[in-house]
Image 1: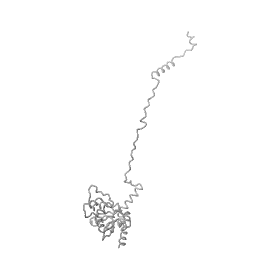
Image 2 (image 1 turned 120 degrees about the vertical axis):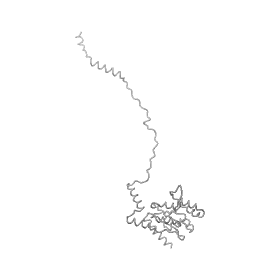
Image 3 (image 1 turned 135 degrees about the horizontal axis):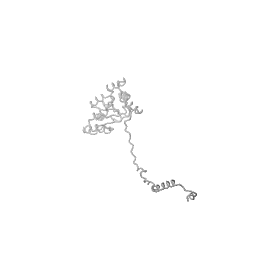
Image 4 (image 1 turned 90 degrees about the horizontal axis):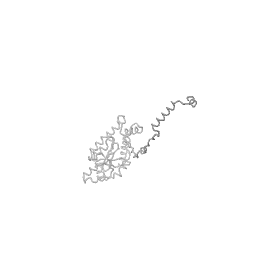
Length: 248
């Protein structure tokens, strides 16, 4: 029986891996009902989940699930201890917590980009909504054994539509976008780092003392006198000594 369950799990995992890009480590989102069922069935999730899925796993939950378990009281104290040992993933309900099922559904919206598995036991509303969304692996416990549910009809129909070329899967969209960013056709959403302005000192040229203009030693009055003298000398005729004797 155990070998048959693992064969089914391997088949279903291959389906999600090939069509939706699910990879190790498998991230399993737990709600309170699944933790309670594991406690009653004495299932060691950290040891048995990796063996069942034949790969590395990460047990995850949200703050809303922990808050819900706290409000339910002592009856679910053991389930709360199991959930507290899981990795807490950030959800969008920081200011006001919501129900665990609503929170887990918000974590797998928009095509389940983080490839979460949803593990629930008695929340039928959560299970039905998960099955309506393509590409979300669903887990539950039957007779104290964990089971990975087969792909839902909505998921199978989505894959067939992708194969026929009618739709493009989320995994393919991400691959196309990554290729475009590598080729420089699309700008990456990562914000550019602003360069810090260096605190510089004052401009060294502004610190220099201003040079005084060299004053001309020649005054304009002396230049005029020299010009006048030169003009007079040029206009007066020169008298030779021989001419002076003749005139006398």
